[in-house]
Length: 593
Ligand code: ZN
Image (cartoon, rainbow, N blue to C red):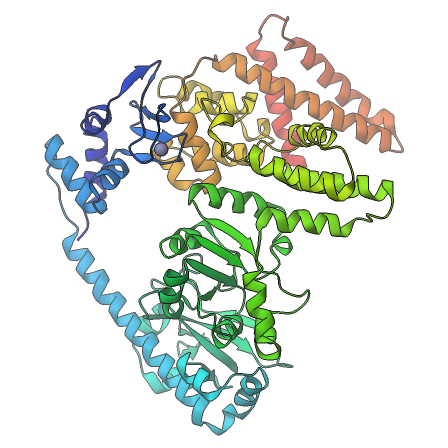
């Protein structure tokens, strides 16, 4: 049973957050916010802040955050509907329910699940018995799968036909397409989604089938993997293959292994580690981690996380902090996937999980291993590479331990490395989250107070926000997370919508800024941002001029920009016109690039 959205908004808006929170804790007004001892973690000095105007809270100690509904949910251990009802009773709002729609939705969902379940059985039967599935059975045997495994994981075969499943199941069009099993072709006839593929059914954690992962046989045309499209039942950023079978062992071991392939999951189980899950053709998402966190506090990645790129590192640290989990990397032999290793050397696979290393340790080792530690120059370069990796970690205590490791391995003085690390951190991006140790934590978290941050803090402010937002533009932001936060705000209509829309890093930043005091003036901040952007652009133009065969062609632009820079210099008389012209020009140029 759901509550009409409009009424949820009314409850949120009419609830007095400070009064509600006051029932559970002592609050003190400090500047524009209210602070108190966090009810969600033990502490002696207050880290918990409420922005009464927006009705948002944020704890700088444990990163608990949300609005008044989240607060009541957590304090009273209620679900969403329960929390809204609790608040409605206090505020006198009468609630309307979406009863009828919900019942309808549930019925439709059950219908789709039934259709997918029928398809699972049909494809499975086809694999076991049909003559045309011989190649598929051989392929699975070659990969080391036993008949028992094929049955346990309900593996199937989609024959090389246009509509074999559609003809067999005779589902209504809406159910066939809604379940992601088929579609209507140009002649308005039902056609199957999967053709000539080995199918791994994907189940939700409760064991209901929701989708398929399809693998082409070796040598076949088309992409190797093809998964079901997203449906009402299936969202690939939320579902993990194998969790339905793995969850008991995950809870028992307080550990979940995350790998990349369906056969990896099966291989882990065959090797005595029935606690592996796989993402279904996507990177691990925040939603996956949130789901896994319900079952275990340690995630062991059984794939090469660096292959996922630099952005992954920030995300991992953010997960560790936000969800209070540890992320480690399995010590797999280079170039071997778990599925193969499970068949060739299951002992080695088990050791790979036992000998897991923390994420940062893994990356530091990688950086050191890539260097030549035999020469002084090689050691210095390796140390630099390792420091760049260490610099990304949010905790200074953790960073320092790795600095000592690097000093030892590269035979360098630890204090000199610490200086290098400080430089690397200043050059790098602002750390996504404040450091772990209480001693290192600044009052307002470790977000460095750049002009971009000041602008965002103003932009979320209940009073100055509209003015600041009207003055800002995408082109004024360089930092990726700040830009993402700004875009979410820009798209309106309010801070709540922006937080819902933003990715986790940007949402966390917005939440954090919303409970901080505003001291700056929107006009000053915009002028400062404009100057920074213009200076960057001037350097950019000068570089291009130097590299160009016709440097003179760049001179007019550089001169024009120089003139604008002087017009908005800190000691110049503020000119709205000069600023607007400059912003328009920068925005224009920004789009060209
Ligand atoms: Zn807290």
